[in-house]
Image 1 (cartoon, rainbow, N blue to C red):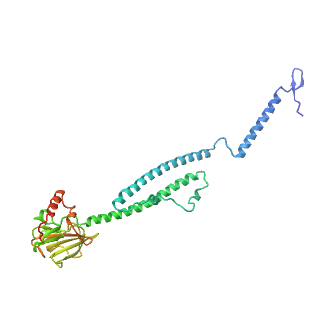
Image 2: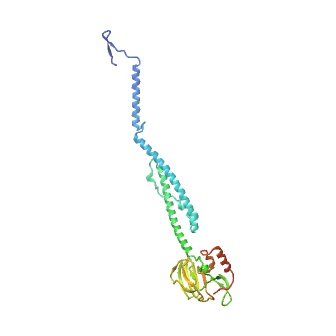
Image 3: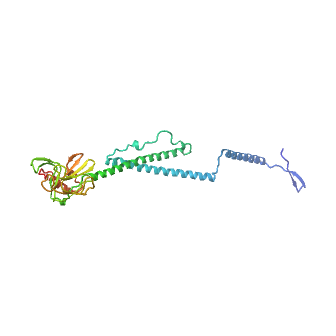
Length: 325
């Protein structure tokens, strides 16, 4: 039962009952219901953990998430660039370096093989961005493996290059007597007339006529294996083992400038022109062996003659004349 309220009326000098205004009861009921609804809504939001307004901590976390996504995009671009650069290096390695040094190319399966077996990324699962993290980790690990393969390949190429450099330095590649010291190139490789018997005989080297005592030079890097006059017909002669199956011979010398066992470099002075042994006049008889077979020395003068000088020598060497030994 609602309370009855009174007020004092000064005109009548008496208390009068307060009459309730029309609609006031309705307004009170409305505000009561509205307040109840708002309270209920607030209670639901608090119960479900939903916040209409982000807290400073939430704003900070959102910014960190955006920053992380930006960093991931930058990482993706860098990884793509590194993959392109590495692909280019691998292509040059297979199609240039390994071909030049006569090495077998490395297959794509070997270069770009993945990682099998157990799940390597189990520890990265269960997070909001697990797949993103796993994908980036996979790409980085594949790149690391490719870099290891490429590094080993370059080590092999370097070793082959060093061997190639040694080979090029070892091949008998220069004329053993300087052009300015030559009287003439007397006889080449092939059938010639023997100076003593006048019979047609195969001449296995090249004869360079020069004054007695003209310097003779090593035509390639190697080790002196002989410096004596113990071979029939050659007189005082020197043999140099260049490795890789190559040997050069210098015959009819007047004296030596090296001894057996000495290491020499291309262009080193090893002896002097003479006419010892089976020789008709002072000259150098020069031979080149490959795998114990005599070959034409004229094919090994690329290191000291111009094209014109080589052409002139080729014409003289091809003439079937008389040799000097």
